[in-house]
View 1 (cartoon, rainbow, N blue to C red):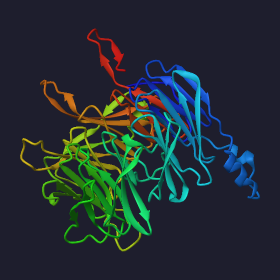
View 2 (cartoon, rainbow, N blue to C red):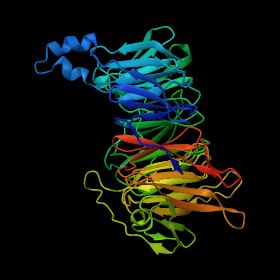
View 3 (cartoon, rainbow, N blue to C red):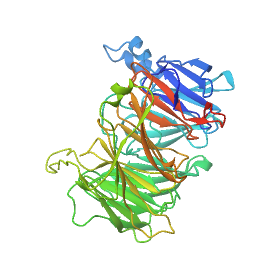
View 4 (tube, rainbow, N blue to C red):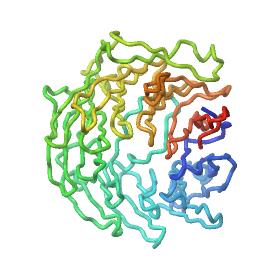
Length: 501
C-alpha cells in the first residue's frame, strides 16, 4: 500500500466521486475537491451558513438563542450527483442545503427548509433531485434542480435513517447494519418510503420518473416497523418488527404478502440486521441469539442456519493479529497474520437476554461482491470476523465457516471491495489497516487466501473508519479530524513499484 499525506476533515465527511476521479471533503463550513491522482485542490467553496429567514424569525421568539450561535453551524451532510456534475452540502442546524456545479464555480443554488427544519439531505439517483427530510417525521421534500419545483410527501416513519449516511462515530461503537426507512429501487425508478398515517404503518411507492407521483400505497402488517430492505432485483421487499418480536415479512411492491418468517423456537428478541444476497435469491437474517438464518426466495423458509460456536472446526483457517506488531515494526510496512487451523476454542460470554440491550447477536452482515462469502460480526466476540463460504449455483448448497480473523482490539469497520469479490478491508481504531484476500498467488501458481496487517506511516493517526473507492483501487482512511488515502502498489514488470490509481 502507498499512503498519501494526511488532510483535514470534519464530521468524517469524505467521499469519492462516482467515477473515483475526485475526493470531496468538508472542513467546517468549506467544501474542498481534490484530484484522486495528484491530491491537488481542484475546487473549493465557502458554504453560506447564515440562518434561513424562517429560522431567523423563529429565534427571535426564543430567548437565549442568538443568530451568531445559529450561523456557526457546520456542514453535516455532503454528496455527489450520480454523474459527478453537481455536489451538495447540507447544514442541518440552519436548515439549508447548498448546491454547487463542479465545472462552473459561479453557479450555485440554495434550498431553505421552513419551520419544519432539516435532519438530513441526500441526492436522488437521477442526480438532479435532492431529498430533504424534516424534523419530527413531518415530511420529505423532493427538490428538482431542473424545474425548481418541490414535491412533498407526508409523514415518513424514520426520517433520519437513510441509505447514504455519511456520519460516523469518533469512538468505539458497535456498527450495526444500517436501519433505513426508505430506499430506491436499483434502477432508480421507484422511491419506497415507510409512512405512518392515522397511527397506522403504511408503505408508499412513488414513481421517480414521473415527478414522484404515488404509484402504490398500502398498509403494512407490522406494529412497530424497525427497518426495510429492497432486494437487488427490486421484486421483493423485506420489512421487520422492532427488537421485541422476531418477525420478517416479505412483500411485493404492489403490497402482496408473500411470507412471514419466525424461527422455531422463538428466540425471545427481534431482528438486528438483514442482508440480501447480490443475486436476490437469498436473504440472511440475524437476531440477538447468535444465529444467522439463510432464507431462499422459492419458499422463504430457512435453508441453512449459521451459528456462533465456541469450537472452531479443523478445516477452518484462523488468522490472528500478531502481538505488539505495531511496536516491533514502528508502524511501517506490512506483516502477515499468524495462521493456524483448528480445532481451537474461543471464549464466549453468553449475554442475559432478560436484561435490556444484551451484548449478543449479529451486528453486521455483509456479502462479498459476487456473494461467495458472507461476513458476520457478532457482538459477543467484538474482536473477531467470521467469514462463511457460500456455494455458487452449480455447487452443492452447503454454506460453512471458511475463516476467522482475530484482532487485538474490537473491530470498528469491515468492508468488502466493491469490484473484487474476495477482498476485505478492516480497521480497529489503531494505526493500522487490515486486509484479507483469497486472490493471493502462492509459490505453486495457485490462488490462496492471505491476511495482512498494514501500518499507517503517521505519528498520530488512528483508523476509525474506511471507505473503498468506487473502482475498488483505493481506500479512504478516516481519523477523528483527518483522513488519508491508501492505494495498492503493483509491480510494473521492470522491478519498479507503481501506484494503482
